[in-house]
Length: 243
Length: 81
Image (cartoon, each protein chain N blue to C red):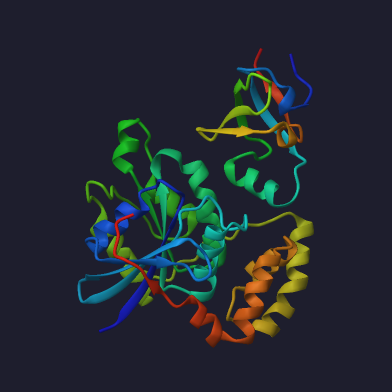
């Protein structure tokens, strides 16, 4: 049976872990992210005839501030390449939440955007045009309430479509000013020559322009010895816990 | 009436400000941008500590307190009368 790996990304307090527990029925293992005292939770569930492994990434506002939890989330998405990353957004504060969504969409197209707390938003009189958001972002977008378990089936069906390749999302690219775009164009050919399609060239170019040294260090480790990188990432299972 | 840009550290309590420039650099700049201190965004000065530092701001519906080290490097124009 085919197993897909799904990562859950999102801001703190968006109900990521509620969704995690809903999907896995609390069947989860927790441990630490390699070399970091950041809790890592992993669980499994089935949808239709497909087995899924679900990884709960640390809740972060960004992937670029170089704190341990943000590095763990970034490294997982970029180096471990989950089949699908679900970006969980808080329907009641989309503006702040979309920052992370845009960052993930620059890293991978294998994304489903999941707007959680939709019941809470309705209560506050916030109306969200899901179809319009889907159009603007260029990836499947689903509204759910993890707490009341609404929208979960629709979410899983979109996740399965993206994982199986039935849907190939094409995120709307972010265009920067002329100066930055020109520098990106200068860098991309050499990056592609060096890395092939192992990492997204445009994203790597942006990180280089940003002077992201922590990424370079991790990338070096990953490129020189993928086996030892994998070993370091190996899970240390701790006690089963709800978090 | 229009207002000239001033550093947030000098803005009065209760004022709403439209951000114009962020002069903070490095990792802290990134963090501030992530939290919503972005040029063009509107913030509100909520309250000041007894000694005037740090100052609490409302940004993207969240309360964030900044020391003057940072808030003196974030510029904005006062909105309204």
